[in-house]
Image (cartoon, rainbow, N blue to C red; front, side):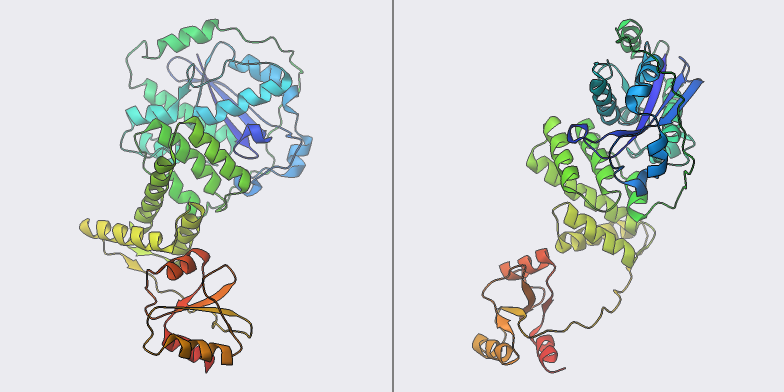
Length: 410
């Protein structure tokens, strides 16, 4: 009746040569009862991408079968069944791309399958879109996240939960009828044994990974699909050029405009801040990660301060007093001869006086802020001048004139 799948991949876009490194199938009957399981590592014949996320080692992948060697077995497991997954559009694109490399097209798509992430919007409206959060809400066990078999089992559990909530036959009966008759290409079964992980090595998920699992859904299927890919891209707190291209491609495919995406990024950062503030304290590590995420999303430090203020106020309305840990004193900032210093604002004494002091100290006075600028001296360090804003964008310190004088005369 159903074949619930999950894939672990080297990246986010098959069109950029990203490949499947692990795939799992959990077959379930009409009531959601598990009929069988199958899982194998796959040799992608390239680097493994974010190994710290999926936990697959090169030694394991090297010994694993190639996709063309398991394609026949996989097709047999999917044939005649409705393919389901949590964010099916993501998994389906990789399955289709892998079969296309073998030279065949397979009927795996969002229109003919079931997406448990989208179904959760109907059956678990108060929960987030992430697999972990949906499972918690539905009482479904999820262990070893980012393991294809465990994630497929969890998605199968979600599907069973949804099946228990609908009348029979289910509202997607047309998809079941189509799956039973749609033609699949004939592929030989290479009789290659699937290879399981030998070192799952479950580790504590880092701060950002824990947060994205708890993010609320937007009640917009197109936005949720984009944000789910963004979740994947941000798991390692770095967005590579190819991941950025993947996000752009997803947004384009979903017809999301630039204002749509900018708004989603702002909502994303606000949701992270709300979760960080919910327990009554925003730790230094949490704030550091929020700043890092903001930069990756095209936002800056002022946006972080804004969302933290909003989150703190919202927590206060719920009776939670939120404190932000004091920032640890950093290594003393020093200026060296040749460093570029830029002045902005009315600093009491004429600008020329301050410039002369800088030049006498061997510094270079810049007319505008560039990435080579070492320091910005502002009459008001909270200035919203163009120079101060650009300094914030580049991560350049902005200090009061009094602090600048201390740097010149430590």
